[in-house]
Image (cartoon, rainbow, N blue to C red; front, side):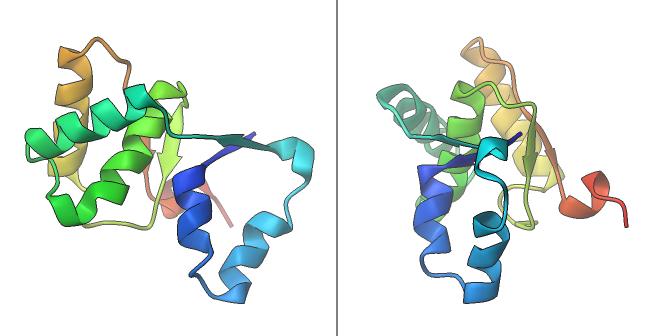
Amino acid sequence: MVVVSNVTLDELELAPHQVRGVLAGMPVEQVEIVNTSLESDELRNAYLEAAVVGPASSNDAAHIAVATMSNVDLVVSWNFKHIVHFEKIGGYEGVNSLRGYRSPRIYSPREVVTP
């Protein structure tokens, strides 16, 4: 099962057709769409307040917050600056731990997809 947030769907609207086609080509029964909530917005803001990422990276923080609140197991991202980065991962995990949340594991696609 692939879990996709409304944050991702919003970002995909600006992506090239080929990129949008990857999600569009997946079987509907294999995709779960989750949405931001008051709780995920509060968690995103906690990441920003803790300076895990800056305000310009609010969407990146939102991805992790929605994943956390949706209890996903893995976040897979090509974003090596604000998501798949050892310092950022530690920051997200620290905020989640202080708030009593289980953190999703964060990986690059190369770590989870084998050719």
